[in-house]
Amino acid sequence: MRILAIGDIHGGLKALVQVLENAKVTNEDTLIFMGDYVDGWSESAQVIQYLIELSKINTCIFIKGNHDVWCEQWLAEDFVNETWYMHGGKETIESYAGFSNEQKKTHLHFFESMPLYYLDDKKRLFVHAGFTSMQGVEREFQVQSFYFDRTLWEMALTMDSRIKRDSKRYPNRLKHYSEIYIGHTPTINYFKMHPMNAVNVWNIDTGAAFTGRLSAIDIETKEIFQSDILKDLYPNEKGRNK
Image 1 (cartoon, helix red, strand yellow):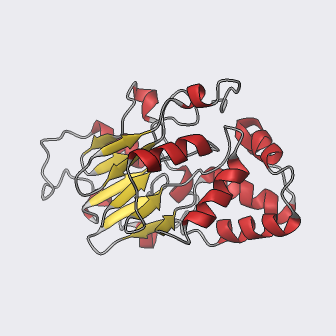
Image 2 (cartoon, one colour):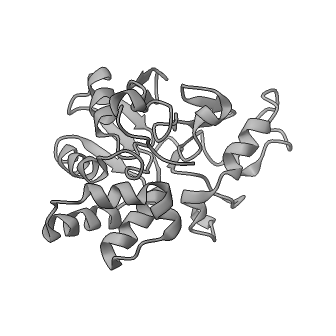
């Protein structure tokens, strides 16, 4: 049995199917999705429907991302956040054309049931963006940090890799967990097309919303599986605007 962490999908159903095929996923594999299932490419509603069906076959953990929070608000209250609309929400709303109210209610329940983070029995943390509390996620006072924070990743990037875990210079935020897996900040911002590792933090968002690929990583072996570049899978679309 493998455990695969899968990065931000952003409405790219074709990339999701391709990654699962490339990884030769079986129903014995556990799949941990890092959030941001919607907004960007044209198949956001279709991605959600696919994931709901996938969860009937595989053990799946769906972490909630910031774009998922916005989509949930729209499904629950018909509220259109202006920032969301400008950054992929428009395409997500359009993708729901033809979906019944009952289907939308099922999707809403899917979003509502998502955890903000997942911690396994080996102290591996999975969270969409990050957290700010020095005492760990259980003591986080700002819920939005779980799906908006970038300081955790920025801190990890600036750390000297020679600093040992038992050093006073090693950040307390990182000491609580053997590994931390995140999405949210595309690695293409750093001109990297593959998942990046800094200290004990792994960033799995390889820019599927923009000019990158969708990635999955085997968290034991660190083997990486990727889709094609999404703009090649959706040649008549622009993807998300930064």
